[in-house]
Amino acid sequence: MLEDLRKEIDAIDDQIIKLYEERMRISRKVGIQKAAENKSVENILREKEIINRVTSKVPDEIKLYAKQLFTTIFETSKAYQQQFVSVRAGVKDAIQQVLIEGVKPFPIQATVACQGTEGAYSGIAAEKLFAISDISYFKTFDAVCSAVEKGLCRYGVLPIENSSVGSVNAVYDLMKKHQFYIIRSIKVPVRHQLLAKRGANIKDIKEIFSHEQAINQCENFLKSLKDVKVTVCENTAVASRLVANSDRDDIACIASRESAGIYGLQILKSNIQDRENNYTRFIAISRKLEIYENSDRISIMVNLPHEPGSLNRLLNKFSSLGLNLTKLESRPLENSDFEFCFYFDFEAKVTDPSVQNLLAELDNKGGFVFMGSYKEVI
Image 1 (cartoon, rainbow, N blue to C red):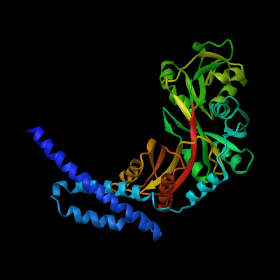
Image 2: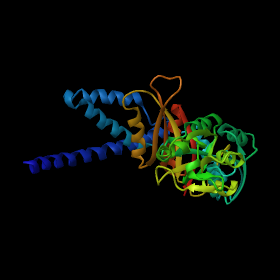
Image 3: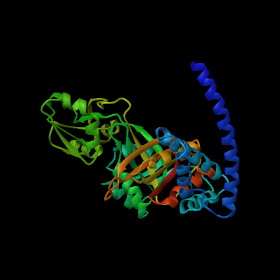
Image 4: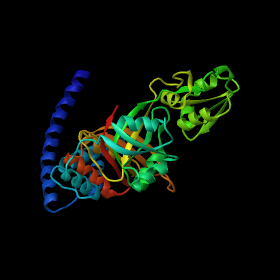
């Protein structure tokens, strides 16, 4: 019985694919005509008209399924038509101008702004990103961005995401505020050490200093200690310097192995983070749009309305172009009811015209930020 039903479905599928092929053939002609008339590929009123017409012909129990089916057909049709239509937008013009000037190798030497002080994880990331780095340290993320904006440093290095605590929303906000671009990213393994002055004993420690994120990432270890106060600092390197310069012998800090060497501290306990695969993803940012060789990742921010299917429609655009999403995260928009900002990272090259058209289409709808085309290194 089941085999007979499957044969019936197979016969219907054969009919569907023939009709779909015919529809896409006509859709191609539509795309070419739209290009000739300089019209947009998307026509929301036309799509709504079709949805209303076709769903009126089916039983109520499958109306929503029919709507989903035709929404998917629309997305594949528009993705196909995009090959024949050139969408204009500011972001596309900027990308094409950079490509015309020529894609160059990633710079070997650079002046770099980092948050914290020597020994901070951001400095470690900068030294991994640039073979020769002249690093200037600043107190806050905002100060790093100001240094880049004023030209004091060509690039800035900031944390964008941690495997344990998620995205650093403050950095996303600064990227949007300053209209900076990502030129490269790197995942830095985070291996936290408990550091103290030479000769100190872990049993005598009464207070531990570190950055809030490092403290959260070592929660299990800290819970195992008794009667120990935990104090938040600006970052792990500042905590290391504080311990090194203090007259107290009963304090310690959570910081990197590099900080131990820089500040003359001893490691009381190694690798105290909760997760062995703990890492922080850092980005190198630039005031100008720069695209370097082998850039195969794109980051964007998109605001979406609180309505059924808004995210699904956008995801269909990526799916229709065969683009692999490597990150999708949302957060509520400030001063807005039920609207969200979405962070997308996806694997793609901006030299691809279909990708340029997708970015242009999103740009034209508003609430869109192109964060850069870059390569991620390990």
